Image (cartoon, rainbow, N blue to C red; front, top):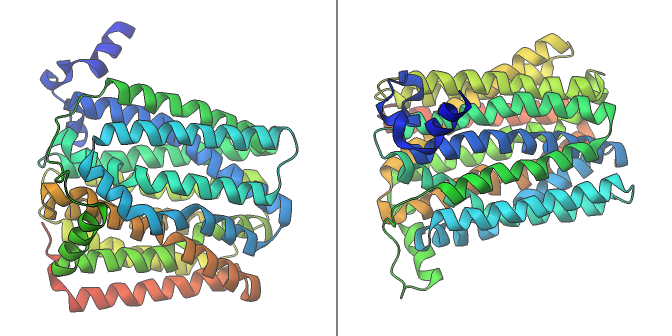
Length: 420
């Protein structure tokens, strides 16, 4: 039994197995290795995210400090993401990921040692979060652009949806386990487990074989390649609209994650275990959306699903901001996760299919900047607003801004809702 299981993931036997449409991208050996190992690694990453937020809250009790940690972790993506995209278009994406995942392991292990020895201070967390952000600036473009190389254009939407599903299964498990472990043994255990989980993705990457693909001209300077990518994105109004939509959602919507320890501790009074369960609610919604998108045989209605996500995400945020009931807040977070994944997977797939092969890494670096690089500004503004007016006001205002912008995109760029 075990031998058959191993053969399924490491040879081409799955290509001859009749897989349900929901899992059709798993017929590709490289993607099977990548997807399964990513799921393991994601569980560890969500455990670390849960524990890190609670650690900062325990050390300082400050919403502003939570915002500063988020700012430090994602700011490097804003400044270095374009270099990461140029690197992904120039070199083997697999080799880039081997380096970034190894560095991420060292980051998690360092945080674990500092915490377990009792010497950790908030500035340690900020510094290590910034280091992780530098890693992610080079990791994200290669990670996103490599999916097309593993599965091809026909199975891209399914592969991205499955990636989202595994990410959110991991969110459910990681946040719940993280909440339990934080309450039982402290934050350090979560950090140690995360460092070990990186061995799964590193091992899988060593077993992945990819074609060389189309690389940028070796004679072109990095800055020239970056300018080419920016000119391409600026000249395509659909790409520009999709990136602007992601920017607004990240800055004013996704920043709710920074304030979840405040919701758990001061608004809903549920403690670390309840904090993990609340975050798991977002994962339930996101997993449901990912499986829905993966089950679609046709992607002709991608624009419609994107529009649904654009509207559902901010409406659910407004419900969360107004709720003081644990059950209602959990349901709102399910809606947040569902809408967010409908939006993000649709945008990701659209950008990858629109972008030419030689530009895909740079276009996905712009996606990474809007999705991750703009998080610092969202975290900082959410923390600052919450520090003065409270976390519910900060989330509510952000949700309203996202809703108004989504409506503007709906009317001003009708091509978005007709994407296929």
